[in-house]
Image (tube, rainbow, N blue to C red):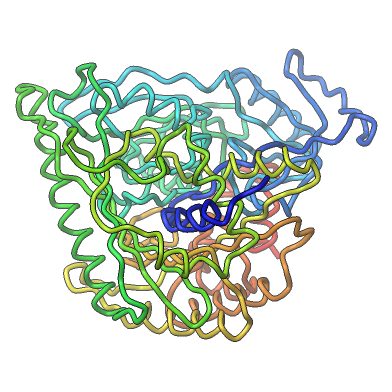
Length: 559
């Protein structure tokens, strides 16, 4: 791939539009990198009639961690029950895998992997009741397919991962964060109910505010539980209105994007307070709109589209400089504003993919390119490109790299830290986050690391057992790095993330378990001690022989 000097600067400038919050801002690996059949032993002939089975090498999203399991592709819940029954009797280990967007070992296992697929990919029709709009979908439905069904009807999931290839069951199992989470909470907040297959082969439905105490505990543990207690097959979640006359086919809503440049010396206290304030204002408007959409069951004219923003702060470090960009998006009607430069948000654009690839080789040019190329003002883009440009761009960047050189891999590492913001959401305490940022910047300069970006997002508390936000109003700090052809995570990066994880623990925070998790197990146990013990107690009740496992959870909580 060849880039002119002008195109290179423009591409790197475009990378500032790539905040790293949410389940995955970097999308799906371009391939499973399956080895030739001769390089692997043949799949075992297990007594599971009609269930497709292969032997494959599968990678985590960072393309560093991998496993070589026997992969089953069940077509229905009965197939899943058969696999679990066999695994229980044969003392095997089973891991569930969806869209392949996990950064760490959350979907890796060298024994048996259940790959969710077409049999669980149905997307129902949206409906409404006295509590508002909702939709039922299969656990293997991708967010891309969900949005294609919803957007023409003026409806949208309140919190949605930015990787279109991510599957609904996978992001629920991670209780994902999105750019909308400051307004609507993490993904678990929108889930009405889900169905799952338990280890004994039975199917159970768990409801939000379930009257059965055991099912309520299961609801709170499965969301964010990484498939450790059962296998989700179906999900029902709330929807929000993004256009007047919801549930009526029409043009897709468009997205307004405003990018504001901050100076090199950031007033962290002012910035963090502003982030919280914007999030609270957006949440009030979101709740008002949600109430209006409920009233619209009887009076459709009340379902008016909101002025609804999603907010995050990407911070770029390079050399001695420090800059921050304010990223604010809102859905609205077409209006005479400028289109996003370079078509960076459009689904058919290669612009941001080239930026992803370029920044893997030239990260130190980011700050310079931002100063030259980051415009101020408002821009308009279509919904699909905005919703998934993060995941789609990196998938395309990986594919571009692989096409240019079949042996080349782009490695992306991301880790997130939840820092306590105090119990008063109206007046958050920014001290822990400010101190963490001071330590983070100092450690980066000391070891000479150049992140692709650092992203800050205020996240309200939730009640999900293994969530980093469990009873913890927090600022989520996500730091991302890119590399090329790294066989293992570089030692300097490993040490940096371990040190940052310890800083987070000492400041009363938690490492977010969704991205890479590089930390001393003792630090993680201190952060999640009570929650991990409760998870293991539930594990002994629902999976007493320990069949459902993944490399990541066993490594950090069962050692």
